[in-house]
Length: 295
Image (tube, one colour):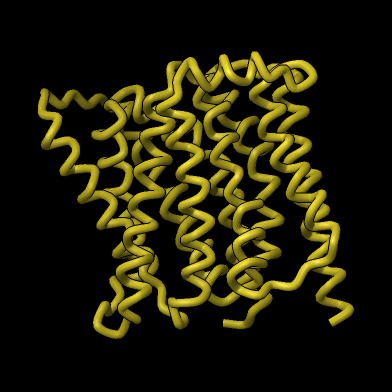
């Protein structure tokens, strides 16, 4: 696939992921964090099987298969549980903003480990994105006491979101180096579903499923599965740094859709923080684009 086309396919994932936070939160509220995630990834794996097919694992580079599987399953576990264990819809949106540190971390990891070239603007760009995430959590004028109170109210969700951001940035970086053009997304999704079903079995308890929950499962699986299918094409064959920078726009789209779906009003300070994340993305994009032209 041509690099430009693959990049466009990868960018389409941002539109699909925009609805993911609200949908995943709705499912986990109805079914519980573990069961809800197990249902979403099971349906998503089936969706991906028909869209992308089942990969021939024998032809996969062993490092990509093992390391990629571990990072993918670990990230998805962190993401789903961080949203599921949030105390409210508003907190789920705030937690998701922490997860959106991963694009800036991906750029940083690409520079550090993959030799990606970038101009000096990438430094203030990354700093502004990080500051935006903190600003969205801390309240007026980056109130550190408010920030600590937000995190202290639910350290599990915030900790899982932060760990997930690091894991996904590592996955994007490792995949580019080790995949050798292979696409294991369907296998990774099935493996993630299996991991969540193991959690469900260990927790025990009765399973109660209603019709609306099933609708949300189908929508979440379609958004998540379709998004990952498109993103994996992009990171395997497209411009990873451009995709990572453009993905900074996901916080605004995701927060807006989640606030609507979850009926969770967000403060003006939160939107300021989200806008700062997007502004940081533009600086990163400009830095990598200018560097590429000079090279």
